[in-house]
Length: 320
Image (cartoon, rainbow, N blue to C red):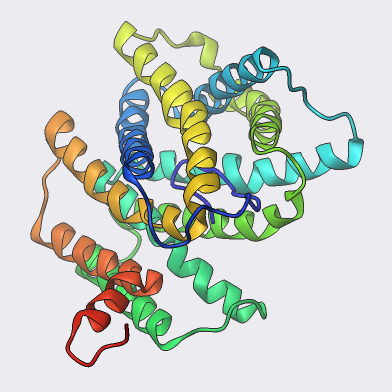
């Protein structure tokens, strides 16, 4: 599973419970969803004064520095095996460089809430790809969830899709491309099961920084831009809190509650991102946005299965 901020989850220690979370777990989940909701806001603020690749560079570069400092503080270090670093570079492309670039490019033309909603379709894309590649088979609940989610996308995108490649539609396609890249990264990332999570995160973000740095230098000449204090603050918050600290919360929650419970974050981030976009950027919450978000969240709930399972068990004659 890959998160809206770009984290690929290797296998974690067996969770304490696959279905029950305590108050501490819920606190971690809410904190993580809040950080990732704000990430879309910080990226939008960064775009107000910087081009796309410069924002990407700030996100991965500052995040890599923060994680490397944290690794040194706890006595861990990056590996030296060349083959492992080749994998880090490939994962960095799939999990950081490509999706971050597509998301931030798309945010030039679509609202933060819509961006988060579209990225929230990642689990549904993962279900389809896993089935096609011979992994987990599609259950009736997952088929229903994917179908409902697709209906939500149709409502969200609206009739503008029939009018050709407008800027808004282009932004939506770019964001869906990022969701697809996250899904492929999650499949590829399974080979890193034996790498400590923080080492994996620091390694891929370091590689992502090395990839994006020359691109931003050639295309943007980022050193020529004058950046206000507010944008600097947003970029640092995006990197340190939305990416570095987000990784730490993500992996801690993964170890405590397991990947199934972690899927719940995809239900919360779109709501938070839409709210912060409306509150801080004055973005409108249109009926199409609200309707599409509701259908996609319903589809995610169906893919997850637990909510509907509990409803069935709660009915007279339902399973215990």
